[in-house]
Image (tube, rainbow, N blue to C red; front, side, top):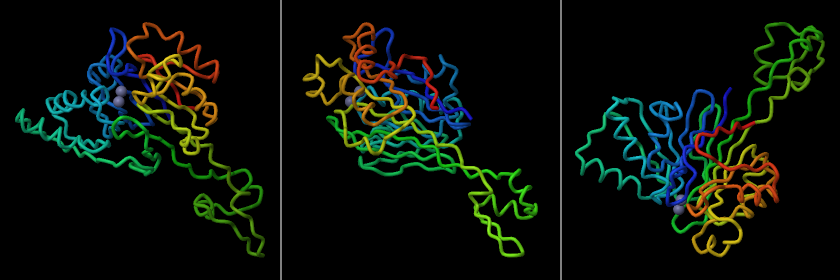
Length: 303
Ligand SMILES: [Zn+2]
Ligand SMILES: [Zn+2]
């Protein structure tokens, strides 16, 4: 089952000729989640062959323009393309008013439901299906800001057919064993479920953390995630500028990744002052070797 993230934008507040405002698409099986929606996100989706009509859930970190201004155009286009599928947007407080003002000012009549769920940043599960859950994590920025943790749910144990056959367990008992039951023979011998089934594989996890001072207290929540996206707006020689503006440096992001024992780090939300990202790669890898930079169009598997 595919589980990966495509980078649509990796610039901080001022875009450049090659880097756009924050946005990513997380693909999980047949589901696609949009994370942040900077200006031009719909164009990036078209460029990378992503059908945004298939997106049902959008997670916006905070209401600075570089993270949400693309919503207005994208919702407009969805409507023009006769969308019927409902859309749910999760974000901090204030977006609903902005969207309502947009609809009323432009006399825009939507043919599909847009639900905005405004969250006070805190640890809470905000979305859950049979296979994945999304948890909000409070960040520290100039305005309320949320990080998102996407966690695959633990799969079911798989029946060990060979073992069951060897022990002479009747076929009719297989369904209840699959559902977690032990098996007792007629003479009273008990076979615990763990002996008759295989462990489900480890679940996969992705964390998205942007526009924040580095948050060492989140280590516990994101410990061991397979992939962490963390902002690195500045290099560490501009540490004080980073802190004044409530951002992080590459070195800080990489130390945090190492401490949280994540599988892989990708950094993004780069200041437009950086023409190329070689120094970011070097700075991050010096602290955490499995680091990369988020570049538009790149796809990172979560594995
Ligand atoms: Zn930003
Ligand atoms: Zn911001």
